[in-house]
Image (cartoon, rainbow, N blue to C red; front, side, top):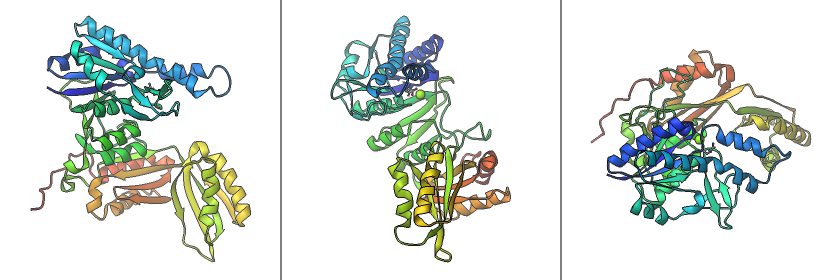
Length: 417
Ligand code: ASP
Ligand code: MG
């Protein structure tokens, strides 16, 4: 018997039938003796439809007004799930963000949760069996409805789990867990039984879309045990547990846990930059002033006192970045600017690589034996990323999946005495 938060995403509540199926699943947990707090998303497609509606009046709508519209998607699901639960004899109470309350800052459309009081949630269990809460929304200090950014109901669920000290936060979605890589690219991808928070954060920020990044950060910070499961498969499937890093000894970790990739980046280069102090700042200063996020940065060793400076940005910012760089190039007396959107980033991630050398070279060898040229490289303690031509993305992911034998469950190596 425990206190569980179960979050159901858009596809899990995408139709009255799906909502009835969720009610059944919740009722089985209740029969088990668990106290269940359910957090729901809007029905699939609904938030997009609402965003679209707010764009029908020309120009950018006021974010505060838009939040009033977007928050309605979740309200509908809360009510429908309560109806479905009562139909099968489970007493439920539904709550919107302001009723909990989920207190946020004033950053409408991407508000951050500041505080959640668990008292109203706990009180629900005095005369109801289940508490159903709208995800993705909260209320500002001024009393206005605010939303948390797309995918934000994951974060709602984790924050609520932290506030009521739940035993586990279960995120139900349409995939049955976190995979070694996207199964649409590599059919041999294997579901992981567990992954550490650190790895999950890297996977999420490198393009794996299973969980909103913020929810993973939150769970790591407040040590909320998090599990990703499918609401479409049978109940014996335990999904993927996102575990606290210190719970698993790194001796037991495979070198590489997963492969992430990202097609959203573009590469730009400014050539023949005079090699003087302040050059990097003169190049990146105007880029960051234009609010353009830079990812990888590479500066070559200077030859004849000039150097080439390359970095990656989001594809949406490509044209703007080139314009800015042309200007910088003229000012600095550089040789010119070029760039391409024809790239992708492929990364291997694993806390196990911290204690083992040679992971990067295995990666490079595997790419070279497929004839794939590496354009940029960056590394951190638990990941190695490369930029390659976009047309080799699938090939690279499959080659790396093979090279690190990710289709096989890792053997547990005995811990050193
Ligand atoms: N309904 C919101 C969205 O589609 C929040 C969520 O699903 O997590 O972004
Ligand atoms: Mg969602």
